[in-house]
Amino acid sequence: MQAEFEMKVQVIRSQGRATRLFVNIPLSLAAALDLQAAEPVRWQRLTRSELRLIRLAPPPVKKRPKK
Image 1 (cartoon, rainbow, N blue to C red):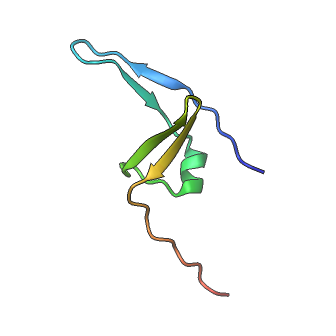
Image 2: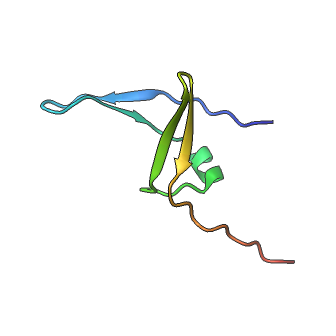
Image 3: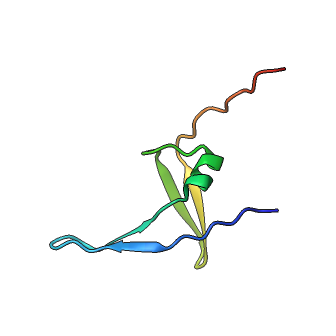
């Protein structure tokens, strides 16, 4: 079963600046992905309704200690 997370696109309007749109990633999803603050990512448009988030520099995989 795939996990699903709903988010809203937020808009920031500042005087003298272009309008900006933001999408916040829920903490539970960020934790599941081991996403770090300020980590570089790229959005790839697949279709008008689908995006893919690409991590540009993912952290190394942590090895679990053997029991």
